[in-house]
Length: 577
Image (cartoon, rainbow, N blue to C red; front, top):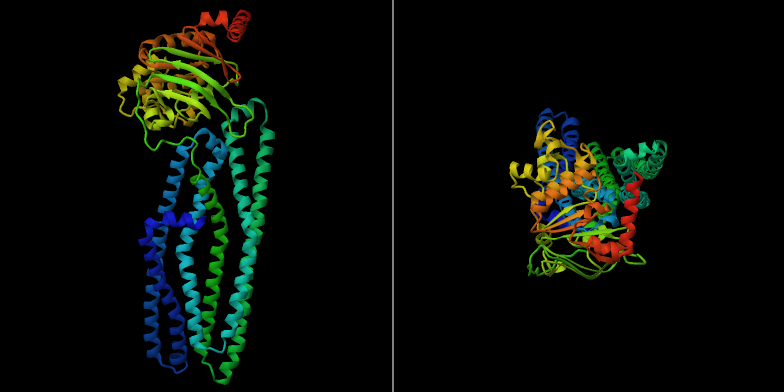
C-alpha cells in the first residue's frame, strides 16, 4: 500500500527525484574517494616526509569535500521539496475524498480519525519520503561502493565484511519485525486520544454543568496512558537498534585492526591502506545502520499509508451519475415516492414508504416525536444520504440522476445545529453567494430578525466569528444560519427545526417576514412546536418512520390521533405555564 501511494503521488515529481539520485551518487562517490586520498597521504606523504605531496593531496581532498557538501545539500533540498509537494497532494486528495462522503462514511471513520489521517499520518509518510531521498539513495550506493573500495585496498580482510554485514542486517530485521504491530497500535491509540480530547473541548460546557471534570480527566488519562504504553513498547525496541549497531561496528573495527595489524607487521599491507580499510568498513556499517533506521520508520509509514489509502479507496454511497440529467420541471418541486432509508446493519429502516409532494410557493411541515426520522427525511432531499428504497424527485428528476452540485445549488439548508465558520459575519453570510453585496446581506439579516444584534456588534458585518459560532448565542446562530440560506436565494428551503432556539414572538416575526421572500419557493419545515407550523399548507406527521397523517392543521386535529396528541400535549404545557 505504501509503495502504491508513493508511486502515485511522487510520479509528478520524478524529475526532482532523478536529480536527488544523481546528486547523491556524486556525493557518495566523493565520500568514498576521501579515505583513499587519506591513505595516499599517509603512505606517500607522511611516511616518506613528502610535504609537497601532502599539500597537493590535501587540497584535492578539500575540493572533493566541497563537491560532496554541495551535492548533498542540493539533494536534500530537492528531496524535501518533492516530499512536501507530495504531502500537499495527499492531503488535498484526502480532503477532496472526504468532501464526497455521505454521513454514512463520515460516521464510519469518525471525525477524529479523519483528522488524524489528514495530519499525523500524512506527516509520517512525508518524513519517510524525506529520509528516503537522503538515506535510501545513499545507503545502497555507499554499501556497495564501500565494499568495492575495501576489497580494492585488501582482499584478505573481506571475510570480516561477509560476517559483519549479514549479522547487522539480521539483528535489525528482528527488531523491526517486532516494531510493526506496535506502530499500528500507536496510530489507533492516537485516534482515541484525539477523539476524547475533541469531545471534551466541544462539550466543555456540558462537562462543567454536570461536574464531570474529574471523570473526564480520568478518561483522557486512560487514553493518554494507553498511547504512552504503546509508544514506550515501540521506543524500547527502537532503543536496542543503536547499541546493536555500535556493538557490531566496534567488534568489526577491533577485528579489522587486529587482523590488519598482523598484515602491516608482516609487510603485506600499508598503514594507509589499513586506515582506509577501517574507514570503508565503518562507512559500510553506517550505511547498513542508516538503512535500518529507514526500515524502522517504514513500518509506521506503511501503517499510515494503509490508513490513508483506506480513506482514498472508500467510495461514497452517494455516487454522482455518469450522465447527469437536467431538471424536467420547476426545481422547487419536491416529491418522495415510497422512500425508505436504513442504516448499515440496522434491523429495521429508519424511514419506510414515505410519500408526499411539496410544491413551489407552498409550505410543507414535518412533525413527529423525537427519533421518528424527520431530520433523516430532510437529508434525503439534497442527497446527503441516498434512499435505500423508493425514490426522491426534485424538479421532476430522480436526485440520483442529477449532478449533486446542480441539485444542491437549488437548495438552502438550515440545519438543526447551525454551524458558523471562523471568519466574519459577512464571510459566513456570503458562504452560499460570494457575490452578494452588503445591501443584500442587511436585507437578509432584516428578514431573519438578526439585523439588530449585528448592528450592535463592534464591527457590524466585519465582526469576527469564532469557529462553530461560539461567540454568539444559540438563537443568534440560528438566525444567522437562516440569513445565510436567504442570501443564496434557493428554490427549496429546508428548515430542520431551525426555530427551536427562538422565542415565540421572534419566531412569529421571522415567519411573517419569510412569507413574501419564499412565495415562489418550496419551503419544508421540520419543527417540534405546533405554533411554528400550524399555518403550513401541508403538514406531514411521522411516527416511527412512517407517515401517519397528511393535511392541514385543522384536518389533522380532527383525523390524526398522533397529531392531535402532540397538539394537546403542547396546549397542556402552555396552560401549565
